Amino acid sequence: MNTKQQRQAIIETAHRRYATKKYDPSKHISPADWRTILEVGRLSPSSFGYEPWQFVLIDSDKVKQDIKPFSWGAVNSINGADKLLLILARTDVAYDSDYVARLVRDIKGHLYSKLSPVSQSFKHFQENDLHLASPRARFDWAAKQCYIAMANMMTAAAELGIDSCPIEGFNYRKMNQYLKEHHLVDTKHWHAAVMVSFGYRDQPITPKVRQPLADIYRKI
Ligand SMILES: Cc1cc2nc3c(=O)[nH]c(=O)nc-3n(C[C@H](O)[C@H](O)[C@H](O)COP(=O)(O)O)c2cc1C
Image (cartoon, rainbow, N blue to C red; front, side):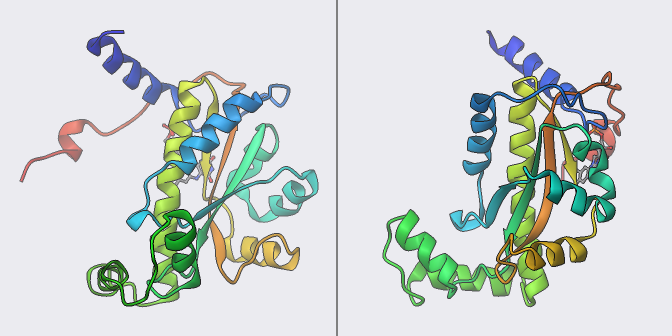
């Protein structure tokens, strides 16, 4: 494939990715394709490399039916998508948290100290640049990063001919409460960020409707 064809293929993938409203429940994603999509999520970028996410496959029909009443945006996906993925965002990513200490030590293989230059610059960044002054602000910051992983997974899926739908049409308070009451998630440290479904569409793609580039892109 030459560069021109590559560009064309990229744009075709972007057109092909479509927020799928009707899935064919008889079609299933192969294990190899699913591993590829998850791997792309795992390899996604995160602030300071602290990976504030968890990917939870909602496989249980009971859980799917239980969450349906407060997940209006997921009903179509629950009714037909092969995979329904809940992405959790870490609530307490901070320079002095056990979570960051574990990531730095066990994953990155670096020495960890609250007083190290990296820890202190992360503290400064969160407090003075991002102004993360509340637990809610810290969660939102982590959740933004979860959306990057979700987007990467949807693009990878589209390249594999797999359809997807991003989902934030659910009641977040009820979802977290449900996950807590059913002991499915440690909700002290993890809250629902977003869901995303994958499978095969049972509908034609409608052409994309978007603002022209001239309205959304400019130089300063
Ligand atoms: C953050 C986010 C949340 C969304 N939530 C839902 C949802 O809950 N249910 C749904 O059916 N579609 C949802 N969508 C899909 C959008 O409606 C869709 O992406 C948009 O209309 C553009 O259409 P397209 O993705 O097919 O190009 C969501 C999209 C994004 C990016």
